[in-house]
Image: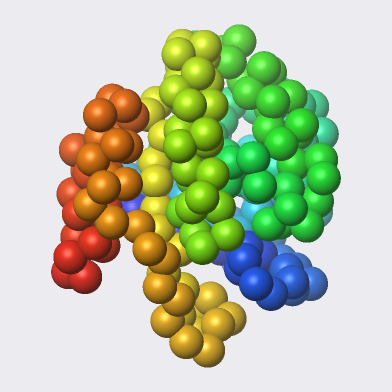
Length: 209
């Protein structure tokens, strides 16, 4: 069973500022990770949580994924504990502008270089397609293909479509003009898993997935 744990309320909304983070308490976190049978996914950006190392320690010998926007690369660089799966959220050449921090892409490369040395760590990049970066998609795809070929322990990137609702602090549904032509180009790159292909098809057809 997959259990999503929002370590804080940080998310990226491409037309509104990032809110001041509110972190989950370490006590509540430890109560949540009380079974070895689940896959725990740390969301928000756990790297900015003041108890990041304590959380990773509580997860040792468990199955878990750390998801990060690379806001605090230093804690990942200094970390000595095992992280089996690391997902980096990176939205292409416009990533740093979209997220309001000029160091994020630089931080990503530092993290990739560090964790690519450990074959026991799986790396993946999650790319969100939005109105703000769709015109750069072909260029970003070329970069993602290069990264996938360079880092042996990196899985195929995962593409999501930024169809936001009020849940993500927006009042209305946001339409992203990602269509069949985009999907055909993306599919020919070999970057899509079958799961990701099915998700993108469902998004285009406006079907549940």
